[in-house]
Length: 386
Image (tube, rainbow, N blue to C red; front, side, top):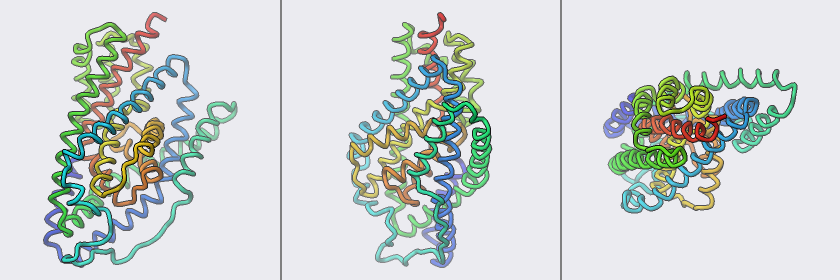
């Protein structure tokens, strides 16, 4: 998060003062990195989703099945909550942004600015398409839950997932600030930085307020089901919230989330099953951020926002969130395929999405792990006596 913020702050003055040839050096890197993202996305989807579904299916009992259903339902409802909230607020909140930044993601430069283009590009097309990767991953993952001798294949997929996670943490995440730097260098050079930064600030404030409302709703429902006061429950889970703000990782926060769930009265055995599972499958905060950021990018660029298309995006995104690794930036990496295949985002739109997401990564992660406590309270009410 800090490196992305530094990249934005450095990219803006660079775009204003760098000579054209130097700007093109960074745009050349951005072009190569964009092509690499296009290449790696189908492999990310295959490497994350297939073993994720297979492992969950292998261990899914009645209680864990209920947990997954609650987590998926919560994630989908959050997506629609974010969609309609942004649909209502963006025309007022971002008034003028659509006109000021329309065409932001197009390649044409403004008339009074030198055309900024890479010195060269290298094409390395993906091995298969995004939708092919999604369907293939679902087929493999679900197939491994029903066959008896699938352990060798699962081990192969697990090893491939390790390679994908290493690529994300060792290549994509470290190079991402330089990619963001290039994006804002180009935006500044084309005279659009004022509108974009104003939009960033407004969206950040809105998403924080929406996460607060979401947590209040989740714990109100949990309190009603468990017949407990929701506010002490939420207050107890705030320790996990604060921890996640620092770690930016659902997985790293599991011990604290587990401890606080037990303090909420959840049976330790149930908490020991539900909390680690929810760290993988319950990403309501990430869903809220991705939906809000996607709508902001579409609003700024003048892309049509169709309710039916976005509904399909939300349902499919909720499934892909199951495979998102509980590490910083994991959810947005798993969501790239759906952004491309359903909403039609190109590499620059994906770059802005990643920038928006990571810039406020702590909020979403904290919302995710705190909401896990609400799911644990509900599951404990349903199965605690057993």
